[in-house]
Image (cartoon, rainbow, N blue to C red; front, side):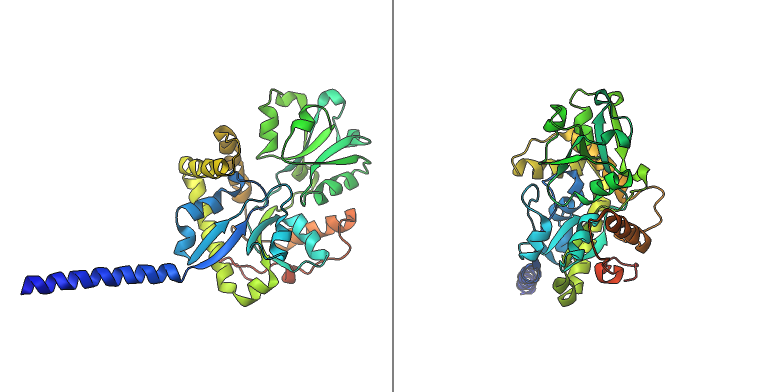
Length: 330
């Protein structure tokens, strides 16, 4: 009889546990996240948070969509195709100044990795040498800072939109190209061109060091469910910390996402990118927490965009940034 009672109790406990698990799964909030580009280590923290169940730990069932050419993330937000997206700070400020109802809830990248790359054989050794030249730039939300660079040096150049390839630059279709240090620059120097053959202009070396990728939502999303926003940010930051501390595991996850998007997967390139992401997400000399958007950095970006003519009005810092990061005041 005692054995029978123990058996019944054991079965009951299993039912109770199963019921609790089912209930927990039922209460997960379904949200859609869209990074601003195609799968790569630039978004490793989010992929890691998804694959390792970190989002679920924070009560979220996250679907990740692919961004990239023809898929601007601001449009995805405004059309309600995504709940959370990443946008570069300058691009987001431009959208906000134009009337978009977006808010920054976490500034993930606090250093600029944007740069111009040119070939020395074309006689471009200084910014002034780009005057009258053809410059390639990405079509989606990446024109503000290149314009600011040219404005700073009073350069008159022709802009040509490109997609996600450096082929036009390699084939001399353009004289200069905007690239990210963590991505396209590495592809260029691995295409057979020696670094010594290139002139590189890091924007941060020209007093244009602006934060880049942040996490954005619509104002209504933040106002209606700030806890949802805080949970997404907390899980994403945990994903980033895990990604940096577990390189090989993270690279395997990134490669998985790249292959699922039917893209060529180059692990060496992704390893370089992940290392550079660490440099710009958690710089050794950083005086801020991951996710914090410092007001002076924000205002500096706004002022440069105003001077370059990219925006006509200055969005208020407090209406633009609604911190969802623990220990960072709003």
